[in-house]
Length: 477
Ligand SMILES: [Mn+2]
Image (cartoon, rainbow, N blue to C red; front, side):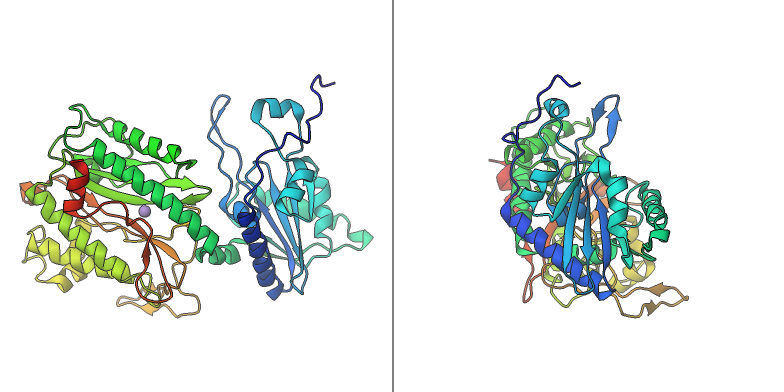
C-alpha cells in the first residue's frame, strides 16, 4: 500500500493558453471535415515517446508536433482519437497518464484524465493504461482508421493488435475498419498554412533569436577576449534564448569558426575564434512549440577583410533577391533560382569559377559548376519542426519531363501564410586551383519569411543585422 496520500486536485499543472485551445478545436474541426470527405472514421494520434539519454537520465522531453497541433497537450504517454461521423460531427478522446501521488513527487504534476478533459476541451478522457481495453470498442463499426504512417516506432504493430481485438468481436456483430489512411497527409497540408496564433508565436520566437544573434555579435566584436571559443558564443545563445522564455534551441546550434563554416552540419565545438577570420552562427530558439531558424556570418573582431567582404556581399545580394522572389503565386523553387543566378554571377566575377569552365551565368547553372561552392537548397518550410512538414510538390500538376527521361515534380506554389527559410551560402574549401584569399571562407545568411497575399513577404527575422556596415557597427558596440 502506498504511504503517499492521494494527489490533491488543487495541485494541478499550469492551465493551457485559451487562444491555443481555440485553435486546436478549429484544427480538429477542419481535420474532421477532411476525414468526412472520405466517409468518416477514426483518427488515432500518439505523442512522442520519452527517450533515455544514458542510465536514468532522459533527454529533455519534447511532445510530437502533430499531437500538439491538435491537442495543445504536452505530457508524455498520451494518445488522442478523433471519432468522425460522415457528416463531420466529431468527438475527441484523450488517453493520458493517470494522477499518481508517488510519481508526481519525482516527476512533477500531471493533469490526469478528468482535469485534462476539462482543461483541454476533450469530449472524453481515459487513463493510458486502459488503452488496450478501451480503444478497440471505439473502433467498432467505423469505416476507416487514420494514423500517422512511418512516424512512431512500433505503432503499426499496436494498431494491428487493436484491430485484431475488434475482429475478435465479429460474432457479436462488430466490424473492424477495413481501410487505413495516412493521417500525415491532411495534417501536413494543414500545418503548412500557419494561422494567426501560430504566426504570432513565430514572430516572438524570431524576435528572441534576433536578440540572441545580436548578443553573439557583440560578444565576438572589438575587444573580445583573446581566447574566445565557439562554445562561448553558444553559451551566449543559450543565455539569450532561455532568459527570454524560450524553452530550448529549435535544433543543435551551429557556431563555426573559420574553416569549420564549410562543414554544413558542424556543431559548436572548442575551436578558437581567430581575429580576422569569419564565424558562422546558425541558431534559433523554440518557443511554445514553434521554431525559428537564423544564420548570420560575421568577422571575428568586427571588420570584414577584402576577400571576405567580396564573398559576403555576393551571398547577401543573393539572399535579398531570393526574399524578393518569395511572393504568393511564385514557386517554392523561385527563391532558389533567384539566389543561384546571383551566386553564379558572383563566382564568375571573383574568379572562383574560371571563364573557360563556364562563360556566363547560364553556363554556370548548366554545368553545375556552382555546386562545389553551394551544395544545398535555399529554403525549407518552417513551423513547429525546423524542417517543417508540407509537400514541396504542387498536387495535381504533371511532373516536368527533363532531357534524359527524368521527371521533375512541379514545385509547390507559394501561398499566403506559408513560412519558409531563405538561406543561400558560399563555402570555399582550400584547394590549389582556387585563389588563396578565398580559402576556408564559409558564409550563409538565413532569414525566416511569411508569404503574404499581396506584395512582398514578411521577414520575421529582419532585426538580426546582416548588412556589412550594420554588423560592423553592432560589433563595435
Ligand atoms: Mn534553415
